[in-house]
Image (cartoon, rainbow, N blue to C red):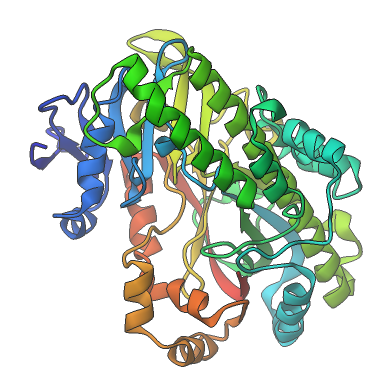
Length: 482
């Protein structure tokens, strides 16, 4: 890998380049502050950016968002596009937690209206929502229902009474991705999915009540339904054990396929196949099915949050007064139209720890947002802040319409456990007035604020690079973790 350098265009202070060398087909492009780049020096994440640049058919560049850190195959925060026909698809570019993503529910309440009831809220959410490693939920899917979930996603959940049709218009892909085939999902993955809908999981999955602390773009905030001090609810989860098993299964498939189709790759974690091949088509169909499972899961989780919020805060007046702002995927492969070299073409965009960030006027975003751009939801950490951004036209040329997905880890889970005790973390959060419940104290420490980059800096780079515009900053009030 050649050394990293700033972009030659001095107006692009947040753009860093790894020039093609060896088997790289395109440059590596990292969007970051100088401080983030300094912290990345010597890490595997930069080498992974260069490795991704070796993928057959890769277009324009191997892109990394400001929240970049080491992942499996791709770095977390990695984006790469290939032609939709014979371009290369790799599970390492999407990840184990297929369609891990986030949604935000808006409330009519202000922070001072809820402050005294936050302990009750966090306890009620913790009791209502199954969380933790391997935790099963109350919904036992029949084989027929599971098949419908894999095809219809959030639409299945709405049809069963978990939310409204209006929710679907505010989900990426309408909450159901085309091309899903339950027949491409293994029996083991299906077994793991029978009791997972409506469960939070563990790791960085969470439910959070937060409050708008600052507004940067009042026009976009108004279009999004945001106001100062407003209480909102974040729901962050994915495809649970089913998605993990789909990835596990197809990594084995691709290990054999890569030798069949012949590309030499610098990292076996990037094993894959042409999208047009039998292996590529089958993986895409299984990945889409797992993505739909995740949308159904977040739809049910949001229903539970609405129920609890209305019990704790009856002045809300009904679940219809907690509308969905938006739901976005963070780990996914999407077929999208993009302009490359002046020509519009269909491409497969791998987003691994990255958020779609489509601009004003784009036909794939809800009509109510077309004057300001797609909401880009960026959860930070449970002790500092999160952001809501809006997509830009500039991002379409910079990153295939992609932006950061969070703060990004600064420490491994083991380092986080070594550096902080559960008692110290709980005391730190208490001092800030943040109420937290977790299924695991070990897991809680692994998600400590100090384990993450400073989301303010990550968002400053995202905004400064032109990937997305700052709309609002939010502070955490109450959090449940898996």
